[in-house]
Image 1 (cartoon, rainbow, N blue to C red):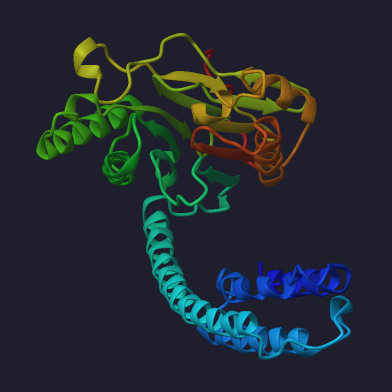
Image 2 (cartoon, rainbow, N blue to C red):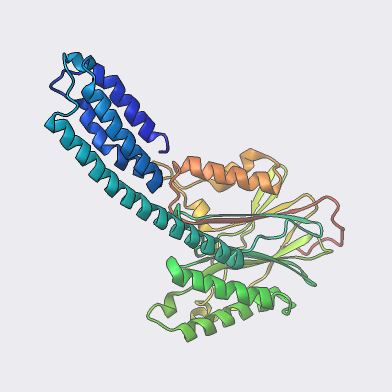
Length: 365
């Protein structure tokens, strides 16, 4: 866009010598100030206006142009073009000044949104003890910064506790619900010794928050979530699933979906069922990797409407460290969807390094 005015003038200079005298192509220079206003400020637009008037005069006063025998520098049609170019230049300067103000306002809004995202989805530590962690978050809207997908990793005396979730709906209500849920998890993760009790406390806090907010959609603000816990000594991972896509365990040559079929209802809907949370225990040895993700990944569609085959793609990639895994996943999602993601995407990859301490064998699960 910044080179558009120069290309515009170059195209005109190419056309001017080859067009008949009855077709004064130089008149299109009237639009040069508006073309400049698309990517430049008011000062540049003013300079382009002066340049356009001068060039119009040069082309009009040169007899050799377009086969003319005499020049038309002060012909009334060309004089009118000079005045029109000046008027369009003034309007272009006003437009450019307005655009610059809007861009500055948008930059400020984006800055505030970036700060809000860092508070809501603060970057997870890249290393916690023997665990290497990486996170991925991409909004489906190109200009969006925050949404309803969430993740967190908290080191506690019970081990590293992980959360990934997806708030129903979009907009500020989803962001508000995600903020309340993350705040409750970050606080309760240090206090509750058992993972089901942690999930129950988070749901209680969320229910209380939703009741205080009220509104017609209070009963529909539910969150699908996965709570996971990796103890510091035992080679296992505990999982409580609340209506969310199950995590995936990756070993070299093996991809396993950690799904026991005992998923609890989403948070804020558990009161309708009254069932307790089930904790499932799986082996998690040094070298293993855990992938938690939201349904924006598995519900990504290609041009034919086919869902993204996550497990099949993971099996074809082999052993990748967390950062390369998420970068590969993000790139494939963009290619698979034709660069048109329909939903927010969030993922958390956790790798247990080979220097992790060993312990007794995990219980069956």
